[in-house]
Length: 67
Image 1 (cartoon, one colour):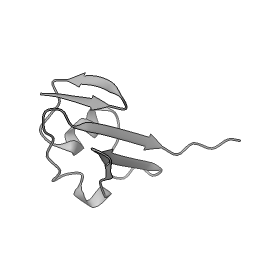
Image 2 (tube, one colour):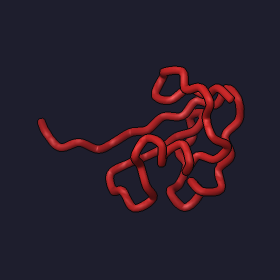
Image 3 (tube, rainbow, N blue to C red):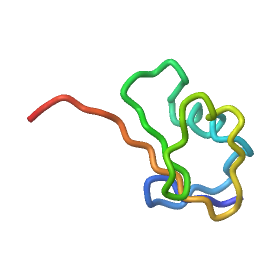
């Protein structure tokens, strides 16, 4: 399955969003992270049950400190 992650192709994506995030080093306990799928924010409570489909566009936003 092919999806897009932050605007870049991501091939061989797993079936669930949480599995994909784990590959990227993101866990449900990690603070300061927001995830959107096809333009809609996915609440952290739904990461585990959110299925990925071919062509999905995933965006991961991490809050950073600085000015």
